[in-house]
Length: 189
Image (cartoon, rainbow, N blue to C red):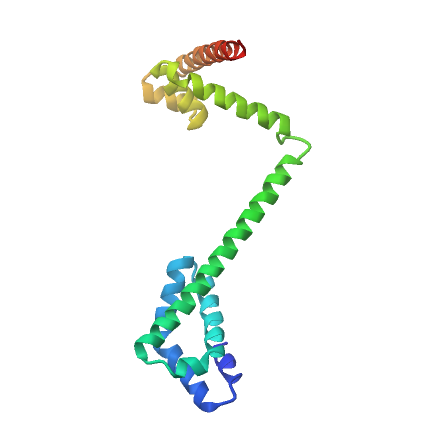
């Protein structure tokens, strides 16, 4: 691919100059791009794009000494890699926004906007009363609903029977609900 790019240069001396830059700096350029992108295929693409960009500046490059030339080459690939990473991030954000929108428009199974708001309010209310629950209640609720552990796993961890876990969860939920209702009544006053 790069040979084809160099053939775009009409002057043989310029082709040799660009080939020399590539041979001397390719590993450093690839390393720099990969450090930023963490994707070897994308780093290779950025390397090729950078060589094209450098070819546009060949007359300037020919006037530079060794250290300045190396710094310019590294700066070029670094900027190209950062631009690529920003573009990828913007695309992920756009994709995530589309996924979010798709979830909101799902007729069956997905939460409606009202359900989402209600869930957010319930989470806020739970966060308010969380410190007032006993340590055992918090542990059970966290293991079951946050860590998504099975009753038998929780029972094994606590050295109790799974039926005891279910009973403890029922009591913890009731206590939490009671505290949330009291908190809600206090907020309304």
